[in-house]
Image 1 (tube, rainbow, N blue to C red):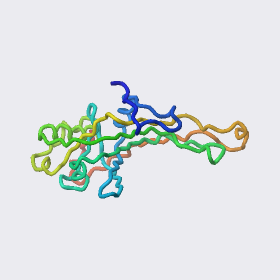
Image 2: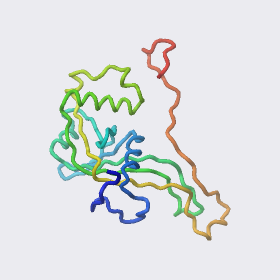
Image 3: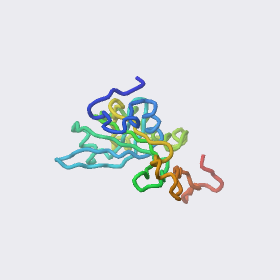
Image 4: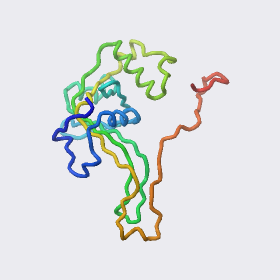
Length: 208
């Protein structure tokens, strides 16, 4: 499937040119984002929880403490909305109302399934390690049985959702273009700083 179907929840209401269901574009945002904000309702009150999220094939995965609030909510069959975003730049216009940002974002809707098979949980949790640092899962100790038992792992199918993005320069009005104000885009990116070893790294060992 190359596009997710449009549903009442994913039908764009405005700026429809920025919203779509292209699966490759959705996956690209999911694979680059490191944090998801997951919304749910419990006892009539809304909650939004920031958490790690990672994609494997056509599922987005989350892990939580086995008996934590969110694990209990998901086991109860609650619907959730997961939002992930990447900020690409500040869009500086010549008028206040035309300032904006360049971004890519994904919203997914649905119910989750808990992963209970120990071998599958281990495989999927190691995939998170490789997302954070490609190739690292093969070098570190895998989760043991006690760690796996203490961790709840859930899969949200990538089946209902949208990708939304804005790219490009400001959209100034023609009569503002002559104003003596700089206009354009200031790119933004997450950049790794120098690695900071803890007190147990042998001398001379580099981060690989």
